[in-house]
Structures are given as structure tokens and as C-alpha cells.
Length: 214
Image (cartoon, rainbow, N blue to C red; front, side, top):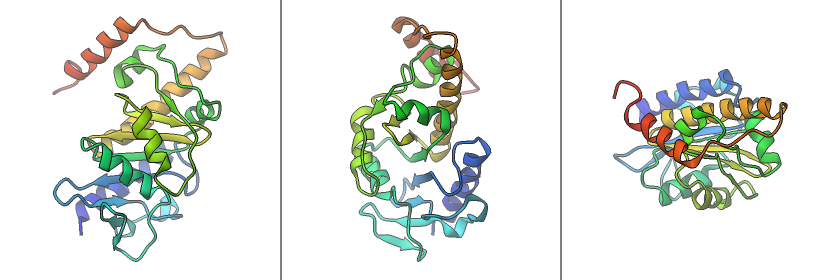
């Protein structure tokens, strides 16, 4: 069932440790199949180097496991909450990437002081409140606070990124950590200046309309 989506998620999961976004078994990616509405997600507690396509768990929108006989990620309920409330989202990534999570530990957004942040995020990368793991509470924090950004920090927890596909969500997670690292390095020189909102809007619009090959 959904074999191509499982294969894609398996490949994307390998990108998380490669980019330094996760350690051991932390973090997860899910994808929603647009045809069936079913969600494929990482199994709980499986190390990335051991992960195979057939290990990925298929759940229905209520969280019922369809296949295989493995427990899905402990974040499944929050992923499903986001999918229910954001029909435009088809991929979700959760990481504990170190620089971004350092901002989350202080409950601080990542300020938009770089053109790259304006391009990707359209403003500051927001920080939501604290929520316990295991239920829908994290998903509710994401939906309530993410706004137009593809990524958000969860206070004292980590990063959630969303996208129109799982690959788009992984890109947002990678760029979140890149932005956090650069901003933190800049803070050693003093408080970084935020770009003017008019410039942020212009940069974000250009990036989404003119950048790349279409």
C-alpha cells in the first residue's frame, strides 16, 4: 500500500541525519496521500540507518493503523491534527536540530535579519508555546501560531515544518536550521538588525514568483 510514498519517505528520512537535524531515533517525517487521504509516517523508535520503506506506517485520518504491525511515531496525533486543519499541507517534518532548538529552548523566534530568511519564510520564524508530546496539543500549537511560515519552533522542544509535499517540508526544516545557525553566529557580534517589512515582503514575493526554473 502506497509503496512509492513509502520509498520517498524512506529516502527523505535519510536526509535528516545527513543534514544534522536529528540524533539517534529523534524526529520524523509524514506525508499525506492526496488520493486516499491516508498518512504515511515513520515508525516509533526505529534508527534511521535501519529504516526501510516497508517499515513506514500507514494510518487513516483518525490514527488507526492500516499497515504494517508497527507503532507509528509518538507525534502521529499532532501530524494528523495539522493535516485536518491545513488542507494545503501534504508533508510534515519534526526535528530537534540544534541551532533552531536552542532558540526554542528560550521560546524565541528566529528574527528575519537575512535575505535568505525573507526568501524562504517571509518573516521571522515563529515560536509557539510549550505542549506535551503524545496527543494533539503540539499540532494545535503549530496550526494556531505558524501563520504563513513553512516552519515553526515549539518552545523547549524543537522544529515542525510543513509543505505541499514531504520534500518541501524537509527543505523548510533544512533551511530553518541553516537560518538559525547563521543568526546565532551573528549574535556573537551583537544583536542582528531585522530587515524592513517592505523589503521582506518584496524578497519573499520575488523568491516565490521569479526564482528557479518554474
